[in-house]
Amino acid sequence: MDQRSQWGTRAGFVLAAIGSAVGLGNIWRFPAVAYENGGGAFFIPYLFALLTAGIPILIMEFTMGHKYRGSAPLTYRRMNKKTEGIGWWAVLVAFVISTYYSVIIAWAISYSYFSFNLAWGDKPDEFLIGDYLQVVDPGEFGGLVPGVLIPLIIVWVIVLGILSRGVKRGIEIANRIMIPTLVVVFLIIVIRAITLPGAVTGLNAFFQPDFSEILNPSVWVAAYGQIFFSLSIAFAIMITYSSYLPKKSDITNNAFITGFSNSGFELLAGIGVFAVLGFMATQQGVGIDEVVAGGVGLAFMVFPSIINEFPAFNEFFGLLFFLSLVLAGLTSLISIIETYIAGLSEKFNISRTKAVLFGGGLAAIISFIFATRGGLNFLDAADYFINQFGVAALGLVEVVLIAWVLRKLGTFKTHANEISDIKLGSWWTISLGVITPVVLGYMLFELLRLNITKGFDTPTGNYEGYPDAFIMWGGWSVAIGAIVIGIIIALMKWKSSSAEEGEYDER
Image (cartoon, rainbow, N blue to C red; front, side, top):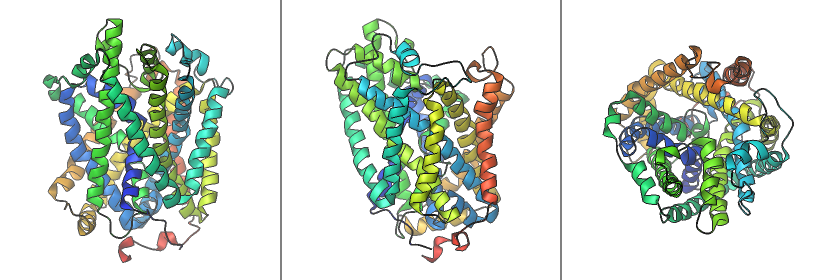
C-alpha cells in the first residue's frame, strides 16, 4: 500500500479539526439555543455535555482513526469486518450533508456581494424568499436560480481544488489561512457589535441565568444536542482526519484543544449575535424575545435588517459577517467531503484525484437540486432528517457498538494513554459507556415519537407542515437511503489489500 498521507504539523491537524467543528451552526444555532434554554444557566449543562459526551467521543474517534489508520469504513472494517457498513453509513450521511451545505455557503457568497449596496432592501425576508431564492411550493423544482448556481459552482471549484492537492498541501494550508482569518474577522464583528447602542441589553438577555431551567430535562437534551451537532462527531470526519496523524500524537490533548476551541468560538458568536440583537431591539423599541432567531432566518433575514440600521459602515459590517459565514462553511465542507474521498480511494483502490472527481463531482451535481426555486424546501427537509435521524442515530450506534458490543473502550484507553500526556480514567469510560448512550437514546426516542406520532403542531402533522409525499421522499427516504446505500457499498469487494492489513499498532 502507498505511504499514507500525513499532516505536516500538529498545529495543522488541530486547525483542521477546529475548522471542521467550527461551522455555520456555531454562528446561527448556538446563540438561540442558549437563550431559549436558560441563558447563562445553560452553560452548566452545556459544559457538562462537553465533558461527558463531546470531548470523550472526540478522544474515541481520534483514537480509532490513529489506531486503525484508515477512513471511517476502513477503520470500522479493521476493528471488526462485520461493522464496515456503519462506516459507510457515516460517509453517506456526510455525502448528503455536503450537497446542501455547499448551497448555504453559496448564499453567503451572494450576500457578501449584496452587502456592497445592501441589495436586500428594506424587507430582507421578502428579498430572500422572493427576489433571491424565488421559492415555489414544496415538491416543485421550478428551474435553476442563476444567483445561487453561479456561487455554488465557485464553492465546488474552490473546495475540490483544495482537496485535490491532498492533506498536507491542500487541507492543512487552507485551514492555516481560513481559521485565523475567520477568528480575526469575527473579532472585528464582535468588537463593533458590543459598542452599539443597546448591545448591553442583548448581552444581559444572553447571559442572564434562569436557574429554574436547570431542572428541565429538555434543557439538558438541548445542551447535549448542541455539543453533538457542533463538534463534527459521529459522521466519519474526525476518524478520517485523525488517520493522517503521525506515530507520536497527543490524542487526548488534541481533543481537549479542539473541543474547547469550538466552544470558545460559540461563546464569541453568542456575544456578537446578541449584541446586535440588543441593538435591533433598542432601535425598534421591542423586547429581545421579539427579535431572537436562529438558522437561516437569523443569517439571511434578521442580520440584513440589523445591518440596514447600523449608524455607519453598514456595507463593511455586512461584508464581514457574510465573509465569516463563507469561511466557517468552507472549512467544515472540506472536512465533510474528505470523508468520502478517503473512503472511495481506499475501497476501490483509485487515486485521490479520481476520488475527488467522482465523489466530489457527483455531490456537486446533486447539489444543483438545492439551487432550484424549490431548493429551500428540499434543503430544509433533507437537513432536518439527515441530521436528526442520521447523525444522532449514528452517534448512538457508534457508542453502543464500541462500548457495549465490541467492548473496545479499554483497548482504546490504553492506546490513547500510551501516547498522550492527559491520561484517561473512569471519567472517560463512564461517559461513553453510560451517560452518552442514555442521553442519545432519549434524544432519538423523542425525535421518533414526534415524527411517527405526527406530534408537530402543523396542519399535516409533518415537520414544518410539509405534505406527506414530500416528507416521505424528501425527508425519510434521504435518511433511510444513507443506511441502505451504505450497506450496499459495504457488501462490495475491496479492490485493494488495505482492508486486510490490520491495525496501526505495527507502526
